[in-house]
Each structure stands twice: as structure tokens, then as C-alpha cells.
Length: 76
Figure 1 (tube, one colour):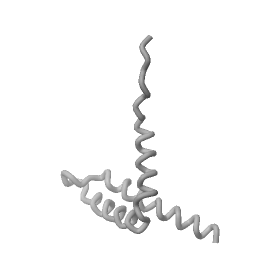
Figure 2 (figure 1 turned 120 degrees about the vertical axis):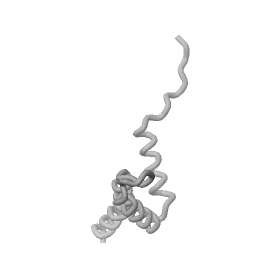
Figure 3 (figure 1 turned 90 degrees about the horizontal axis):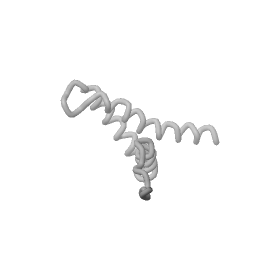
């Protein structure tokens, strides 16, 4: 039986890796601004390049920062 190389990463692995990079490499204030811009662009979902996919992505980026704020308030 021939040996197989390592399996390619699944979509969940890629998504997890992307989220980790976003959390560590993008400053919180920039994430919030980017999230707001994505949500505003998502309102124009009927246009060809802008789309409704931008709404949940923008909300997710903002949620990273909101969740950090909630943890900060809970500890204090």
C-alpha cells in the first residue's frame, strides 16, 4: 500500500487559522472600523461586488472586540 502524505487542511482548520490570525495581527480598533465598514457595505447587498455576506463578517469582527470588553468589565 503506498504511503500517503499529510491530509490537506479542512475548511474548519482554515477558518480557525484565519480567525486566530485576525485576533493576533489586527489591532482591536481597526477590527471595529473594518467591521463597521463591512456592515455598511452589506446594506448594499444587491450590488455585484458588495453583498449580504458582508453583514455577518462585519458583525463577527465587531464581536471579537465586544467580547474582550465584556471580559474586561467582568474581571474589574
